Length: 230
Image: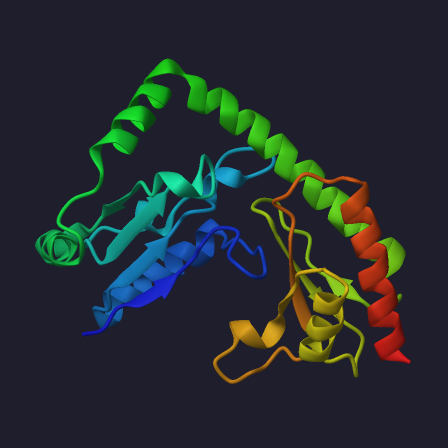
């Protein structure tokens, strides 16, 4: 039976996080229908305040959840180091890993292991969480100041993606072209929908340090949205 895949914590593009109750209900549903789930928890460590959210895997008792994560969003994309807890599918996952690339480069794993052992990763994560929290707050503030009043947006408690609902009549694909022409990169909503939905939604990446250039770009983007909403 084919598996389903899900990002449970601070998912891209909405930044949403499932509650523990929802995660338990999902595991019960998986058990009832004997359906495996691939859980991608790559953003779970990027919670702004309070304890780290639980993984769906924490409620799995039958090995139906294949848990995956990596350091690509927390330390460096270039490390290409991740891990999996495959549950009852351990043998199948090992075989697929062998078929795809046989082995992961040793040097990045050793460097990461030394960094973890030194305590440096814990200090880094405390700084990164504060940085992402502040950058998200700056982006939300900029949208509220520069975009039309009828704009709606999420308020994620972790991660680095902001989901914005534009005023009715503003087409995200047209806005993408306008923004690209102004040197601004956005992700239009239809790219996240197999049916090309979310025509008036965009995703903004808040993972970059906030500066004057970003502020100016948000002001420009707000004017472009206002022009298309008239």
